[in-house]
Amino acid sequence: MGQIEQNETAAISEYQPARTWTSFPAPQSSDFDRARDRSRQGQGSASGRAGQDDEPEIAERVATTLRQTYLETTRALVATVEARDPFTQRHSRTVSLYCEVIASRLGLSAERMESLRTAALLHDIGKIGIPDVILQKPGPLSDEEFEIVKRHPGIAIEILGHASFLSAELPIILHHHESFDGSGYPYGLAGDEIPFESRVLAVADAVDTMLSPRSYKRPYTRTHVQEELTTGAGSQFDPEVARVAHEWLGSMPRIADG
Ligand SMILES: [Fe+2]
Image (cartoon, rainbow, N blue to C red; front, side, top):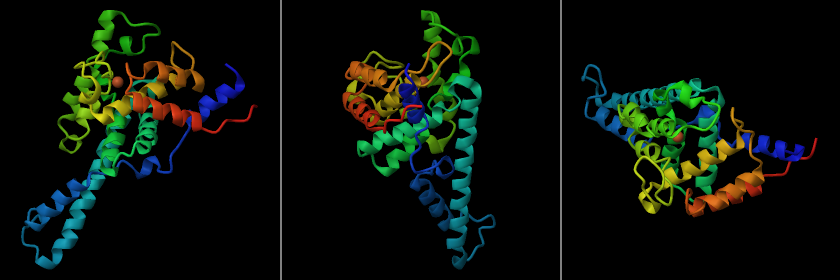
């Protein structure tokens, strides 16, 4: 691999959109609405004796507490994922950023974007249930080992299904290994049967995996990743999502040699 290609790979991996980790993920607006509704009905007050003049303040406190709890819980879950495997420590955050870049070019709404970003952060939490000897195996997996790895989207749902505030994220996570031609897992969904956000997540996940070093491979060059996106369009990847990701990679500024 040439010096320019190495630098370009590093630049893409280090790419950071305007928003930072400390500013996201934001909770769904519907969570706040529900909190305010409960407060207005008197359920937000510990004593139930608050006067009408106190209601806006109480509602704001409930919403603030809910927002803080959401952020802290999500960050704790992400830290759990990243502590699992040294080779994927930054993977979930990078995939989330790539999802934002790709989905914004496809016109995803702000509310659905928030769910996609959160789902991307948590997409591999199910690997907690996969043995290290398989996850960190420095070579190709046997058929039996791959069958075990394929359980991780379902394990994620078992873990995250207890968190009601993640209901929008669950289907995105469950289907992030489906392939556009129906050859993926866990359900073999195809085309539009696969949630759109899962199709974006699948491409972002693959792009970061290809650009990153692993125990068994060196990082792919940008050109190599673009070739893989072209090859996989319509089979592994949604062709429109793959096209946009290809275009985005091509638009990254070239890095000067040295
Ligand atoms: Fe995965």
